Length: 448
Ligand SMILES: [Zn+2]
Image (cartoon, rainbow, N blue to C red; front, side):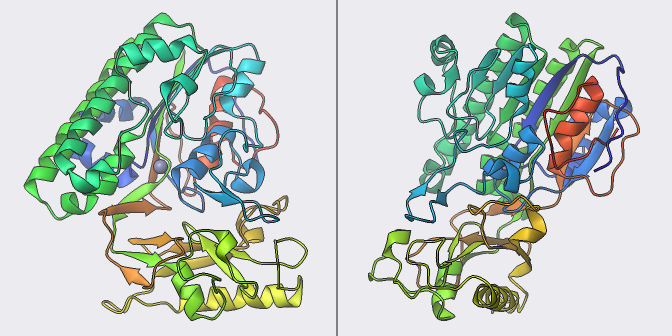
């Protein structure tokens, strides 16, 4: 990797704002249409880049890549769920599994003060030189903060770690009210600690943008007035937050506002374990399979969301039945070719955009915990990993889904441009802006 680092530009501290799942195209549209005047005003003094996310394109994996500058092969957060190959025990990856150092940890080691709130994969909170409030995987505030007393302060102000996304399926009006409340409370907490704490790195992540998009993106795209109005009201509030923040920033502060992936209308859910069953590569030992332990011994492959495929390799996986070498490669080739042939019967379009072998995207140091193949969906198809479905394609209960491309990244540095920026470039670029040496080997590039 080429690292062109300009030392000492005068910026000593940094404020980073995460707007989860806000597409570059949405940001530019809302600015052009006058809904985000404060964000738009920043364009004169900085650069706005379009970024690619990572595969699989989920918030845990993408934010782990942003805060470490590393791809999943290094930081080891491969999705919302994972499994132990030798036991098939399933678990939710957390900061305990994170193998690379985050910027919050590194700044702490350098003796710099940190405030980090809401960033995915920071639960359980690690000790930092400052304050860390975990993101949406934290079960409650008591277990979400370092130091502990911050939990009481946040509870007193009615802070929400996350909204109840399940509620949205039953009562969307209540969901929309709650999401607005969560946004208000996060802004309130952000400005409280921004004013009262000493910090060198100040990070606030907003999950509400992603939640909102999942539940109303399709309706907004179709122009349904109720949701369009709501959407604009929400983003006006986000823009107001940006305006208030910028008004408080000193000259020596680097500002970045970024998302971790894009969004689009969801066409259909794709149940890939059903597809593997149809292909004769997967069988279950029970009629109502719920977990990997229910796999029948002859199963060669299974999938975890979104689009991760695992071959059951002899010597590596519990009851593995595929020989390493030629047989392993054949299974992978068969799965890849079969996936590329899946069509949506309603439109005839491909459901899968591309399939990658793990060594193609995770780098040479990939560990055995990585999936053997990864499918990148065609736009609008949500790749599911449940075991019980008896159908390949079906409508989804939500109307928006992630895209690999079209994440956004604003930085208050002029004339930064890059045609192939990705989320792993954020950390090395931040370090370049601040004139700091990198925390270790990273996969991203410094773009200044
Ligand atoms: Zn996200």
